[in-house]
Length: 107
Image (cartoon, rainbow, N blue to C red; front, side, top):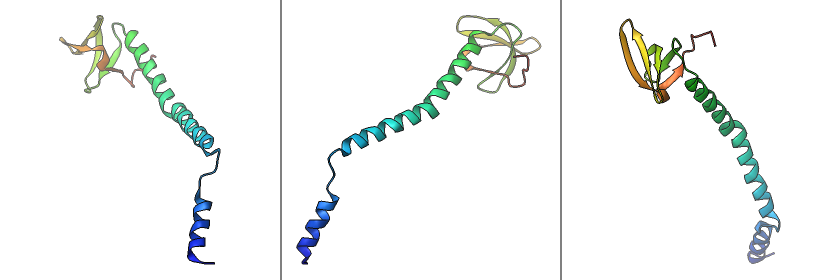
């Protein structure tokens, strides 16, 4: 067996088989499904819960801003919230910058 025959046989063995494209499409679809189940779906669920929390805020609810300021809701407006940080200290913050106080056990 000479060297040329060896290389020809190796090239033939390495050639892609017909129907390999279906396998590739199935693998890509499976990767997408797994990513959706473990990454996208839980994140959407978490975001929906946070949006529901922000829309259900009322006077007296305890909140934390993303900057770490703890306070109690004093007034609710369309896009902003007036929170009381300390006695007679109130600040306006954007609704999108609020998260639920984990120490608040009433909910």
